[in-house]
Image (tube, rainbow, N blue to C red; front, side):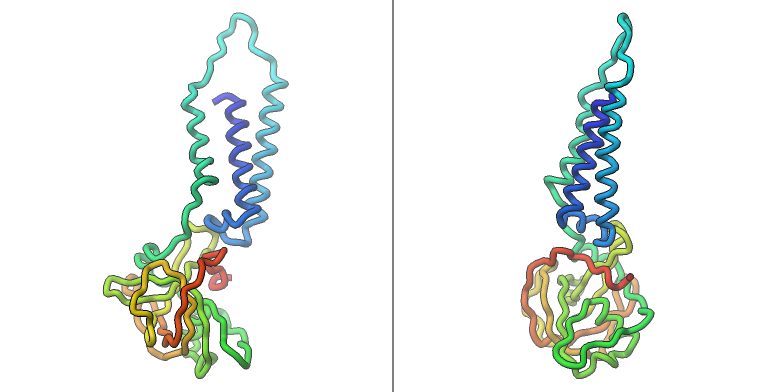
Length: 237
């Protein structure tokens, strides 16, 4: 590939990273805290593209009589995967990944104090961690609200799930809550719900890796839009 093609690809890839970093598109690939690095990488690629093109313009031209071999046009097909990043944003990992991956719930280092009054708005991992490793001491007799997407195991048992990231979508792992109580009669995988309910000491084991999964007794469930950041980063911070 000649330097013109190299410059074009570097520029296109850099512009794609800048576009992703300045919108919510990057959240489909990496955790929110990596946004500055995505923007920096995009700027660096664009600068490299400009330097490559400048170097090519400054280089001596081929002397008369020397053949100038043109690279095949098929090399421009390398632009297609880059364009796909812009035109076809992949969906966030959902129920299929969660159903085939064991819960990644880990014991937290500690449990921050919760508000003394009113409903508790908790993340899936926060509720699961308190329910399993603190025996629900801070959750008893409290109404909780939790948002996540639905997945079903092979037996049809419904779980509320959020996928957590260590770095990027490639290492995403689920944390699950089993649902009991007033569950909607029809649940579709990947549906996002806000669940209102109460702590119950009932637990089960993940059918994939035997990891602990707490239950939540549902009193109310309503569909909600997919959040702008579908991944949960609080469980590994």
